[in-house]
Length: 572
Image (tube, rainbow, N blue to C red; front, side, top):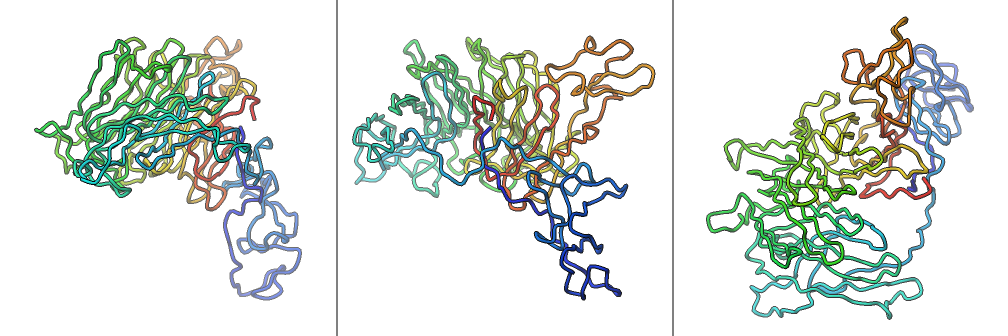
C-alpha cells in the first residue's frame, strides 16, 4: 500500500508548566525548566524517562526528550501515540509506506477540452487493458438563451498528453452530443446553469496508451448523478441517484426509462428540491431522489439492465457497486423517508446493502442497516464469497441525526463490516469515533482488498475521524474463540487462525467453540491492539488496515483527505 505519511514525530497535546507554591527539582524558576529535563503534568522527568501508566507500565514510544519539548511527551520515530494508558498508547507506523515529497511521474493524462460541457469525475475502475472514469456530464449550452449555439460535439475527451508530448500534438479526440436544457428549467446551480442539465457519463480509455476510446451517456430530465462504478471483464456496473427520469439503450436496441417516484403532477421533478447528496444543510435534508443501478456491456456501453432502486419519499441512492464473477451486482447506499410523506418533517435514513441478479437486476437479498445513516463503499472478495463495506451511523455527518449502534460508544461512528455475499448476514463490524461529513464535494473514503502478496487484509479510508484526538479502533462486535474446558480461558479467533474464519472444528480437543454472538464472546476492546486514528493534529482522514477474517485492527495512519485507495500488486 503506497501512500504518504508525515515523517515528523507526532505531538499529542500541549501542557504548559503550572505555577506551584514550591518549585520542582527541574524548575530553575517558575517559567524556566532546567536543561536535560521535562516538566509534564506537574512532574519532573529526565531525558530518556518513559511515560508510565498508573500501574507503572512503561510506554514503548513516549518519553521525555528535552531537545523536542520540555512540556509534552515526545514520540519515538516510527510510532504514533495516543492518550491511552501504556502499553496501549503506541502504534507502529508501517515501514513500507511511501514517504516522499516528490511528485510521482505519470505515463499519460487524458481530459476534456471544451467549454461547451463539463464532467465531474467521481469514480474510476480498471479492467483488463481499459480504464473507466465515471461521473456526471452536463452541457453548458443554455437553449433558453437566444444567443446560444448548439453543437453536436458538446463534450470532447482528448489524449494522451505525456512528458514527451505535453501539448498533445499527437493526441486523439472523441466527442459526444449531449442534450442541452434551458437553465431556467432546473434548480439554479452555483457553478452556473441548473441541476437539470446533469447526465450519467462513463469515459473509456486505453490503459496502456491513454487513447480515449468512447463515452457512454445515460440521460434524462432532471438531476442525474453518478456515484459508483465497477468493471469486470466485459461488464461494467454504474450506480447513483436521479430526480426526474433516466433512459438507457438496451443491448437489443430498445430503450428503457425509469421515473422518480416523487414527480409533480406535470411529470417533472420539483425544481426547488434538487440538491447534490448531503449538501443542502448539516442535517442532510437534500431533495427527493431515487437510486439506480445499471449493468452494461463494457464494449458498447449498452445496458443489459437498469433497476430503479432504492425508492423513497425523500432521498435514496446506491453509493457504491461491485460485481462477482457470475455477473451479480452488489450495491451499498441508503434510503430515507419522512413520515406520511411530509416534506418538512425530519427524515430518517437507513443504510442498505443489496444483491442484484446478474440476468435481470432483480433483488436477490436486501440487508437494511437500521443502525446506520448510510452505507458508502462495497467490495466483493471472490476468495471466500464475502463482502466488505463502509458506512456511518449518521446520514448528515454529525451527531444531529446519529443512530444508536451497539458497537458505537460515541455520538457518531464510522463503520466497517464484513458480510456473507450469499445471504447478506453480517459477520463482524468495527467502528471508530467520528463520521465522514460527506457529500458530492467532500470525501467518504474507500475500501479495498489487499493484494495476495500482502495477506488477508482490507484497507479502509475515512474522512473526519479522530479530529478531536486519538480514538481507538478496538470497537465493534465481539470476537469468537476457543474456550478451555478446564480453565474457562478463551483464546480469541485471531490467535487460533489468521487464514480463515474459525469454526468449531478449528478448536483443539479440550476446548469449546465460542461464537462471536455468544454472551461470553470476547469484547472488541479485549484485543488491546493500540491501533488508533487521530494522533496527528490537523489530519483530515485515517487509513486503516484490518484483518479481513476477524476484523482485528492492524494499524491506523492519519492522512489528508482520501478519495480512493489502490493497493499495489507487490503488497506495498
